[in-house]
Length: 325
Ligand SMILES: Cc1cc2nc3c(=O)[nH]c(=O)nc-3n(C[C@H](O)[C@H](O)[C@H](O)COP(=O)(O)O)c2cc1C
Image (cartoon, rainbow, N blue to C red; front, top):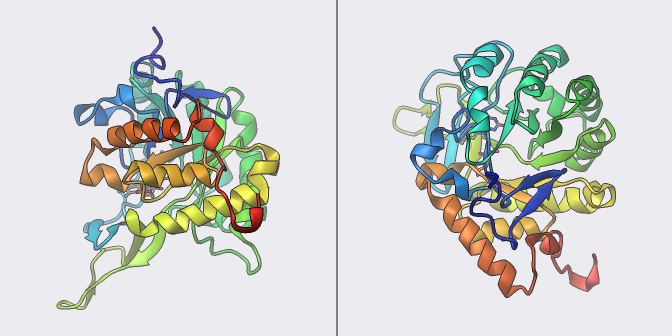
């Protein structure tokens, strides 16, 4: 029995850019360790997949503490892509992907096309990692984000990395608030990524944000600003998935992974209805590491109640006013 048939149910089996997942609920980059560390807290054979934390060519210490704080409806982080670098990831963690009970998806960050390419080659050589995300949208580093801000720069990056990923699917993880040239929207970025060869999109990363301690009058994060995630960002991400689905992904058949504030099965179902083929959960794992299991259960019951035989039938099935499809 393959690891995918373990605990899969026909209502939730999902194909994402040709990759079969037992269900469409994945653990988001940077919130679930390198590969399978979450297995200590939850049964990984019940989720669709795990995304590694973003790996850079060289190791990174990340930002000073405090770098994670709680906010009233979410959390603010400024980890700054702390990771052990591509070489050590390949030697110490990638080999565990074959035994992991969920599909492992890689994540790449960098500050130049060459540095992304180096990590892409590492993931292409790693066995049992069928897809990668290009993180072009981390708000907590002072380089690298411009790829996600400018459609021209993003196109060049994807074109540079694509040839190295002969057998590995490529997803681009976009920012919810691209800070690029005026006039460009997330739909323009999505189109640039798709035209340059991306197999899928991941929408979205954290929302740039800030919090201040009013007693000390100091920023609560050592990095001053950070990225907001959790319930506060969910409706923002739902709108962005909707816009990209309507604007470019539906016509090109490009799968979208919805990310941002999925705490319950209803949040996941909303993403599916506006056009996501799968969802990821990050902040929810900090509140309750087992919450993805409840989301999977709830989605399965919802699909049946909707009279569908598989969740794929509900992707993009939102009913818009005036019959707009
Ligand atoms: C502590 C923390 C670390 C993160 N690290 C990464 C990362 O390394 N790479 C990445 O693409 N996204 C990273 N993210 C963003 C998440 O993958 C996700 O896009 C974001 O948190 C929104 O989803 P959520 O509301 O479910 O957390 C991180 C988020 C958090 C909270």
